[in-house]
Length: 445
Image 1 (cartoon, helix red, strand yellow):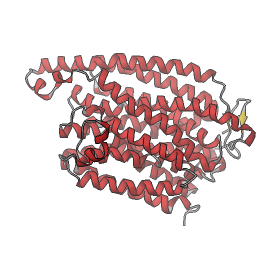
Image 2: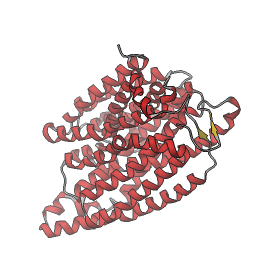
Image 3: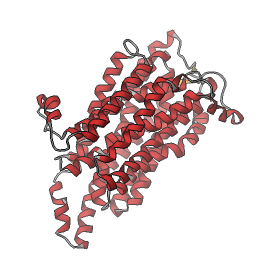
């Protein structure tokens, strides 16, 4: 892909261009914050729509499916769009599509139609797909490759900081006074009364998403006019006859599968913790996503400090996978009623204690934090002219966030909310394989 902008620079910026890296990172960091706001509100939205639309766990997790499946459906079209627009204008177009998706929440809330909510989420995520396809390789290529994971970790701080703040704001603005919408309150009403109560609750979504749409529209204009530099990928541009040649790179294909597993476990840890907390009767269950995101922020801070000074990108991925395996055992085998771990780790904060299994689920955020930053540079290494197509293939791996939470929803409805988390073990095992062996493969044998 070759941009038509006259300000293109080489993919690996020369030393003289280093002064441009920090301003570009700050600007892109703002975009990552916006992506985080749109992504991590889902953890609060899922239990909310479960009440509004009268859903079970499997049905409620269609929210995650509609959102993340857009990355698979739209990733290759996004790469084609970027080939024409360049990275910067592609980012602006993505923000415009996101604004349209946020606006769709208004008629969805007014009608209470679950299908319309899902369409709004798909549209929102379509714009995010275009954004992600542009900004991830942008961050990789604006500086030295061996520090790419560190730069992506910094971007993760912006993204996950939004994940800490948004569920708290959502709970305080949208979920205040939820006592009147308890299961007992619904059972005390006839069918017409329940429908009216759900309609009143759904109306609470109108103002937040209208505000989101306005902010995204303003950002569309700002990005379109921003003086950030364009980048050009390594080597020659992709051409249609060669595009499938990207599949000849095992480190990329296996990396996409590792991202599939990773995004699935990340979404499960962030988006199902509210459902699990509601199942256990944890007060403030809709804001539990903030716990997971807070641990992810700590993980990203660790990555910024440690990579590449003390940990290589490969070693960080190995440590993350092992941590995920151990914490999954804590979720599946730990106490769902005791809070010893919570008192020991969080007692000094004054936060209300949560069950040990809930805390282990939240702590998966720390284990997950460095997986995305480590996989991207490892998977894109050596792709040359296939970098744009490789980026699109990696973005398609985000489909794990659509399919694996659905699997958890089905398992939790049948085997129990806690037992459903056993499915995380093979996901972390695959990530560990990629960290030890898969990333180093350069040819299929």
